[in-house]
Structures are given as C-alpha cells and as structure tokens.
Image (cartoon, rainbow, N blue to C red; front, side, top):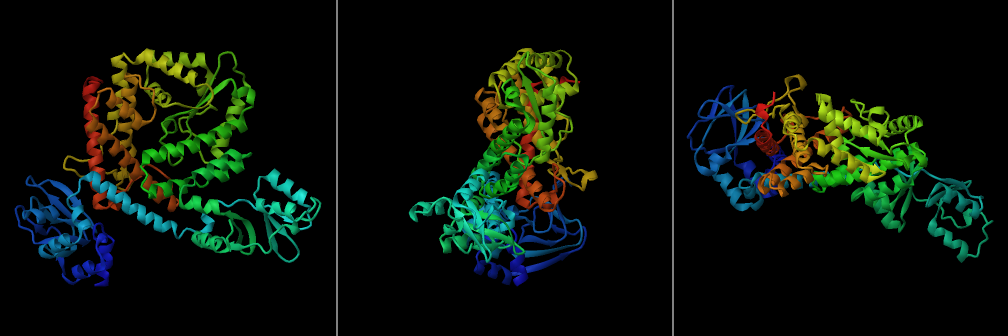
Length: 605
C-alpha cells in the first residue's frame, strides 16, 4: 500500500489528495496486466475503471483506426469516458502493460470529497496551465529551503591585521568598497563593520589607535556547505547581519543578511548594485554568476516568462553598459550608439545564448581605432559568458560597426537586392535596442527602413515566408512529430517560438511598429485591428508556454552540465504538460494560416 500511495502522490492531481483519501484509494485499487496489442477499452464501451499506467504504453485509436494519443507511465485514461459513461475511442496496448485500476465508484467518491481533485477534471487548458505553474512553484521553493551557502556568490574577504590603525583600516575598507573587514590577531579573527566605526567617537578613540579596539571578537563563522537557511537562523539568533564563511577551515568570504534575503526573494537588486560598482571584468563576472538563480527564483514564484525576460534584459543591459565603458574611451562613446540585437534586443533572452550587437557611429567620427576597441568589447562579453555569435553579428565585425550613412547604404542594398542573408539581417536589425547613445539615430534608421519596404507587398511576402520554413511538430492526429536524429526530441524554437516571433516581426515591419518585444508587438497588432483580442490573448499565452517549456529544459541541461539547446523531450512531460504543448502548437498553426492568407504566402515561390 505504501508503494501505491507513493506512486499516486507523484502524479497530479492525486498529489492534491489527503492521507485518508490516498489510503482509501490504495485499499480499493486493482492491478491489471495486458499483453502487447491488447484492447483495454473498445469504442462505445461503458468504462468501469480509471486506468493509471504503472508500466508500458497505451495508444488511443479513433473510429478511423488512427492513433490520436499515446499514454505513458504515470498517465491515466479514460476520465472523459468515465464521467460521461461512454468511451469514444479504443485503447490498445503498444507493449506489455501494467495498470492500476480505480473503480468508477471509488473515483466518483473521491471527486465528491476533494474540491481540487474534482476541479482538475473540469478545468480549461489555461486554468490547468496556471495550476501546473503553482505546483512547480511550490516544488521549486521547497528546493530553495535546502540551498547551501556555496550556491551563493560570496563577497571576497578583506583581512586586516589587528594592529592596523583605525584610519588605515577605514581607508582600506573605503578603497575596497567593503562594509565589513575581518580583523586578524594572533589567536583568532574578529570583524569590523560600518556600525563599529561609531565606537571611535563614542569611546573617544584617536584614529591612530589599533583597529582591534573597535572590533568584535570572535567573528561568527559558518561552513560553506551549511544550509543557507541555517545561516539566516544563526544571524537571527545572534542579532547580526553578517557571517564569516569558511571552507576546510580557511576563510573564503563574507555572507550578509541582504544576500540571503535576496536569494530567497529577488536577487536582482543585489546583482544590480554589484554590476554598478564593478571596476573590472572579473568583478562583473562575479556579479553576473547568480543570473540563473534569479531566473529560477522568480520562475518558481509563478512570474510569467515575458515579465521575467524583461527583468533579465535590464540586468544584461547593465552588463553591456559596463563592458562598453571598460572597453571604449569616453570620447569614442560620445560619438557612437551601442545596440543589442536579436533576442536581447527583444528583451527575450533568459539563458545566455550568443551575443548580437552593433555600433552606429556619427557621420565623420569613424576612426580605425574603434575596431580595436570593438574587438576588446566582444572579447570582454565572451569572458563573461556571452558566446561569440555564429553569424558574426557583433561590433567586432566591421559590417556591424560603421557610420550612420553606411548603415543607410546597407538598408538600400537590403531593400533593392534582397537575398536570404539580407532578410536575416533585416530581422536582426528590426529587433535592435539602444543600450547606450543617441536613441534618435536608431529611430531614424528604422524609419528609413520602413519607408523603403513597408508598402512593398512583394518584399513583405518574401520576408514573412520564413514562418513556413519549419513544420509545426504536431501530426494530423494530434501526436508529436519528433526529430529522429535528435533522440526523438522536439526543436521547440523552430517548431513554435520562431513562427510567432517572426510573424509578429513581419507584421511590425508592414505596419511600422517600432516596439521590439514580441508580446508588445502582438498587442499593437491587436490594437490596429489586424487580429482580434481573443486570438491575440491565445497567441501570447501560447508563446509564454513555449518559452516556459524551453526554459525548464534548459534548467535540466544546466543541472546535468549538458550543452543548452532548443530541444525538449516530450517523453519527460506529464500528460497535462503534453496537452498544454499540443494546444500551444495548434495556436502556432492558426497563426501560420493567418499569415499565409495575410501575406498571400501560397503565391511566393
């Protein structure tokens, strides 16, 4: 019975049941065994059980003998038939299968006793998606309670000898921008904080006195492998706001209360502060190491991907600004406008993929030295974990680092003699966002592009046809079309994300929409009456869901130290997740049909 309860508790919505309800099910559940190609339910049967797959696979076949769904381990069927007292389709085992079988009587009794359990079977897909996110939130937060101190980026320790003068200690703390210093004497370590400096006045000490006279001994320490929550408890118990962290007996850094609270809530403010105070690439790298934790924390709290993307965009923006300042002299920066392009320009980059950026220089200000500084800038970003762009769309490439007048010549070429690579460049440029410099320069160039092509329907159709470059990975009978050459996985970017992004971009080019963010573009397209509000809402929700699936797959790969890509494994998804993914792909297909009609894509060769 314990095994049954444990198994059921790992499946939603059975995890909503209380101990008594699970115990009741365990006492009244049967086990079924079926050989390969066994029919479990036939068309028009009156089902007597809810079937939960313990081992094996079962396919649902319609009246035309076509497979409409495949059920795997931990999936269950046929709830609709059970509630309506009639099975619509046939259920056949694909291989040897073992099931738990819950009688109709027990199933309906549990439904009547548990509101959350009942609600699940009558929810819309959108409601199920929100419920799923809430469940993931709770699971993720429980994981943060077991987070360890070594998962946080500590502040480097400032260790000062106990006989150092108060004046020199303060000067040292000031120059190193430290709010806490570790004081070392012969026997032990103590600490001095900004608050301790008041003792200099209160005790009427001279600045030439040794700093140990205002230090607190001994320093309260904690091991780097201890739980972060225990650090919070220790600070609360001792009434302090900092701890000295040791690893194998050696001091490796300091941990402050603000960092712990930031870790459990939103670390973005702390990271922002560190980025702004950074003076070297190493300090910038240290500040940006916790980006993944920011994403995980806020994602666990149920914050929608599109809002999370905008927050991360602000953090990435600050990194770019800082590297720009470290790489280019002020005189050059005053004559240039730095852009981010692609997903970064759309404020949609969560996990760092590659860097896409460009530099527009005011006419008459270009000097060859700029390319050397641009190379330093690109290398600096690479050192911080922003990989080189495979298409070389970076400021270190002279094609993307030139005067404004030469950008206009480039736009003329794109508009007059468009090749496939020109359409790619236009896509990248349309997503451009100013990081530093004159906003009007980019605005003028985009208007120049709009003037050239926005009323050229032939150009627009050829630009938009890329939405049909990749098939939606959903078969005619609602089954996933997987990539056999890639472990039977789905490329969620090509199959779902790209068509929405590029479709919204193509419409923005036609209607001179300057916003770069995909969701904001969809809203403006709706405001213009091009698509109705209901479809715009569905499109935004589908886009949000697809990004969410890609992000979770990326988290899984990061945890396993695998290379991040755009593939997800549908076999690892729960039934509700598969339903949500399929519904999202259906909306993508609807958008493709709209774009095909709108741009007359069937006439484009």
